[in-house]
Image 1 (cartoon, rainbow, N blue to C red):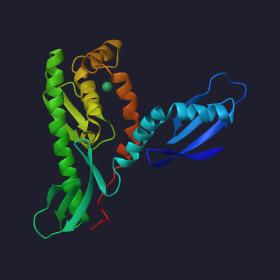
Image 2: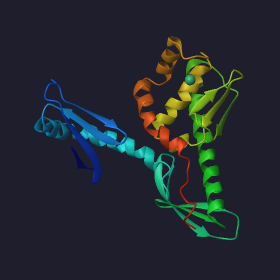
Image 3: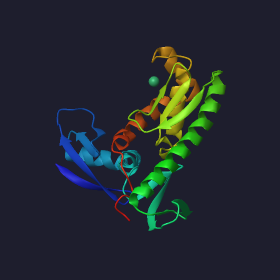
Image 4: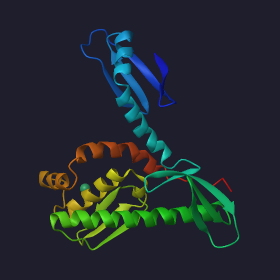
Length: 232
Ligand SMILES: [Zn+2]
């Protein structure tokens, strides 16, 4: 049985599964839907109202990933901006106007290119800042940090080059910190051993939770993209 819940002014589809033989009811999210498993419908309803704050937090997170690259808006320094395109014959440029990012360019393709450059530039700046801080903390050095479009969040080379996905600056800051810390930890351990994770833990005490949260953004990253193509 499925019904819609109202969460933070939005609707969330919830599926109620009744299993009279189970002892404890539980909630989980699957494919953006809330699954409520309980002994009875009433127990399920009670659970939902009791755990509304948890539901609302998870709802926001699962929703972020579909919206990270939503048409017409963009995350810049972890803030969402609406994107408005203004046709212009001069050199492409961008202006922040309140919560709107105004792009002046000849056409949508030019606007996308510009936005791409902005995201990449911001990612390189933010990632370098984090990497320097984290590397110092464990006494390692990196050679260079690069942002590029690819499927992974990050990678670390034996020569000390760290590469991060060019869109990590669109993520909440603590997730950017986790992605970079993970790669910095590889400068010490080129594997995913226990020692490696202990180093990640030194740099990012909440890494377990952050790693899980990052998965909410996984599909968005693969869905590239883009906000403005058809707005012009
Ligand atoms: Zn790794």
